[in-house]
Amino acid sequence: MNIDFPFHFDGRGQTTTADLNDHVREMLEQLIFTVPGERVNRPDFGSAVSQLLFAPNSPELAATVQFSLHAAIQRWLGDILDLQDVTVASEDSSLTITVAYVIRQINQQQTATFVRTT
Image 1 (spheres, rainbow, N blue to C red):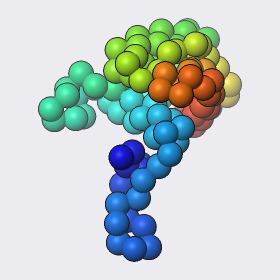
Image 2 (spheres, rainbow, N blue to C red; image 1 turned 90 degrees about the vertical axis):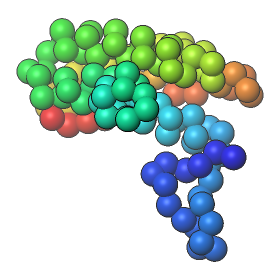
Image 3 (tube, helix red, strand yellow; image 1 turned 120 degrees about the vertical axis):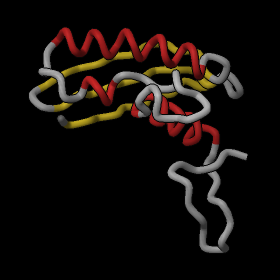
Image 4 (cartoon, rainbow, N blue to C red; image 1 turned 180 degrees about the horizontal axis):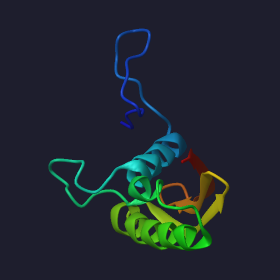
């Protein structure tokens, strides 16, 4: 069962579920925006994106985020997906993260885009 994120109940009072595509995208979102140390039993889970959001926006910031995200996704979600590409673009006060991947279970190409404004 793939529990929907964020956790909530449906109209019948049961835990809401998500299809596989949505579930994998939601896991990516959790990984990208969880600060390492935020989860009690997995203190090294997450990426440094949230900490870097308030750094001066620059191409160097984008490169740092891209490198750290690639490593985090490979480590934490490598058994679920094959990472094809991670692209990070910094423009004005926003950071755009695009992740291209293949879900292993169904061998389907997906692309997820996340935008955060600093």
